[in-house]
Length: 310
Ligand SMILES: Nc1nc2c(ncn2[C@@H]2O[C@H](COP(=O)(O)OP(=O)(O)OP(=O)(O)O)[C@@H](O)[C@H]2O)c(=O)[nH]1
Ligand SMILES: [Mg+2]
Figure 1 (cartoon, protein in one colour):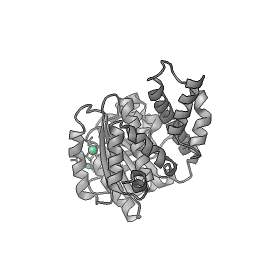
Figure 2 (cartoon, helix red, strand yellow; figure 1 turned 45 degrees about the vertical axis):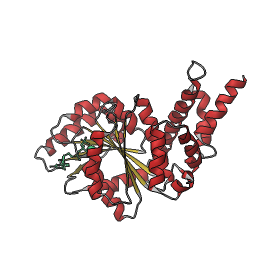
Figure 3 (cartoon, helix red, strand yellow; figure 1 turned 180 degrees about the vertical axis):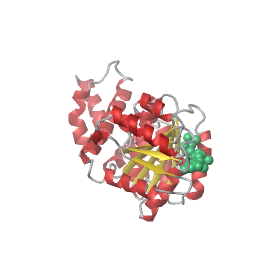
Figure 4 (tube, protein in one colour; figure 1 turned 60 degrees about the horizontal axis):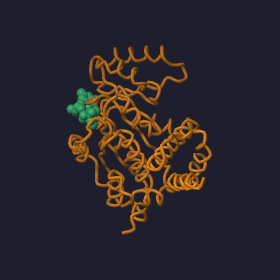
């Protein structure tokens, strides 16, 4: 099987296989990623984070339904930075729940930490590349929790939803972890609770204090269990992803490439030398990769060749 060709045709089997190789850090993964990289970068990647039980998976289901009506192809990646060695067992349960309502055409994959967390964000970003090349229009990345680690994973997305619930006191956690700065939309889920209004006022007050007026992201109230107002949430998502904030999107994609490039190069270099990489040296490469003139894997190999030659 030519796995690159199969991925480009959208084969779920090939996508699953590639992600397994990525997780196993198998050397074949890099060859596949080189082959598919030129075809990536066109999907909307939506990061979804929030405290355990805030309704992320239920909401993902509903968002999927809305996008499916619009004939969009969808991929879901559920990332669990909190379960280092379970191999995603707990996550498996969470995913099963989704599988019932999502149909066969929706590609779902869970990923858990195997070793260090940096590895997880790299593996997740590579899994996103696989789904993008596989022709998914919309990729939802669900991650559990609102700590620093989750922030790293969710930053892989073009657009970030932070899920809050009425009266849960998540707000303080969120402001500590620096999520306020990265949220594009606050979703106040479980809006069927009588405490919704109070929490919304509280959130608004905190945002007013912490951010300039034009930076304050929209707050969308949803009831994920009934799908209430999820269509409005999707409209916000579409508004933000289509043009309005194009500059920001570009900056985020480039930042992601910069991370990938740094990761890939350092992984390779640390095997040979013992020193860090300066970001400034990599900026030209980031631009070339952003234009899809080349891919980060080729650049990393060239970079190392140059070092060896010097
Ligand atoms: N009343 C109410 N319950 C909800 C709503 N959304 C989700 N729930 C319930 O909240 C519980 C947790 O929902 P999940 O979607 O599993 O939450 P999650 O954030 O994915 O949870 P983890 O993946 O474990 O972090 C479930 O019992 C849902 O039925 C809502 O809008 N209103
Ligand atoms: Mg979940």
